Image 1 (cartoon, rainbow, N blue to C red):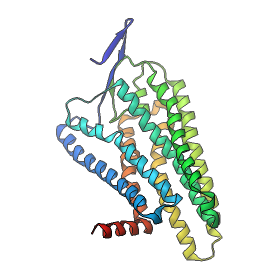
Image 2: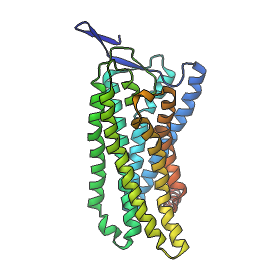
Image 3: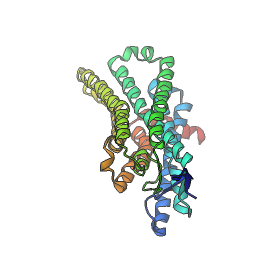
Image 4: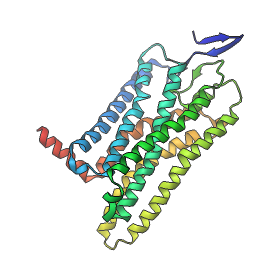
Length: 312
């Protein structure tokens, strides 16, 4: 039963997530592929967290924020992937209205928290390169904890507005969401009323949680680039740049697709394309982040070899 009748008006009580395919063979292949992606994402980010916690030499502000990012990525991908895997092998692909509300809120909150955390990480690199002698004084542990807590608070509070407006819309059928999870624009397209005003509110929220953080990150890196240019030795410039390259790569992988999904109008909604873009910034960024940071980071490699030596 997916409709609730109230005063001669029917309301949706659950949604059907259509996912990527209805073909059994394709679904079996997708299950294996997505299961591997999910396991690698969780194990990769879990490994980053474990190395940072075990190696005292990594107990610095930079790695503290990297640890928070890895934890967010693990939670982020776990919000959507397990349910998608279940739907690929189960007969039913339904999700309750409350479950959809919760998934949308948690997923969006974690994404917004990452947006804010990326600004904090850019500030960390700015202080490290522009004020190296005062780095640990400026970014003391008290400030680091406040910045991390502030990022979480900002993310979870800001998404209350988005989720409330989206889920308070009247949904009187159909109830088939052409997506693999309850993402705002996909669910909102099923509303049986004009969503123009809510789209405007969402775009203002995206400016606050997307454009402003990007602007702050760009401003930080402009100052960083100016500081790097003043370094006389080529080796020093390369070392300074390498500490920022991983962060810039991760920021680009996350911001480009997520900004596309949330900042364009509902009239340009394309279900198939949006599913692919969402999958990239949801699953693949969580998978690639540990790779990006470990491949370019000698400290992470050293910590890994140290732990393996201890295990051996």
